[in-house]
Image (cartoon, rainbow, N blue to C red; front, top):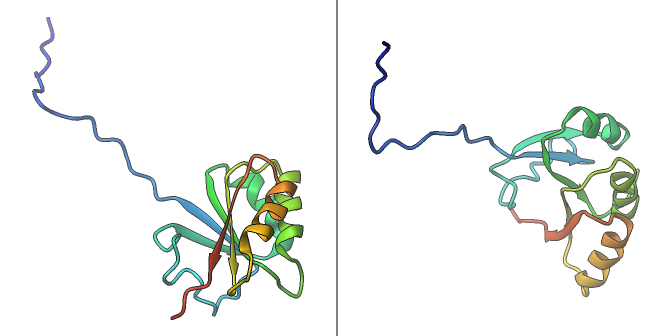
Amino acid sequence: MLSRPILLGCAVQRPVTQPTALLVGFSAEDRIEVGMPFATARCERLPYTLLHAALASKTGTDLVVSPLVTPMFDALDMASQLALGGYRGRYMVVTPALPRPEMIRVEIAQLCPGTTVELVRRARH
């Protein structure tokens, strides 16, 4: 008969995974994560044109982050693409100071139902 050791008072340790954030539309020199709520996440930068490929290959994406406006796309374009890609996580839009940010957040959220849309003012660093 095989004997097994008895473990008393031991908790099962599950590996803690770091959240993954896709940073879309930010340059490599732009240290957008400094001082932001997603600073502790594993941040992966990519161009807007690779969004669908990244969503398809990164099933564990916790957060997508983009600027409000870029020369190539804006947050409304991004919201539409997230909806087309079936994304259902958090979408964080980095903004300058806005007079009525809730109006913009609601408009973006209407384009990607099932996604939590957050507007975050850009941190000064």
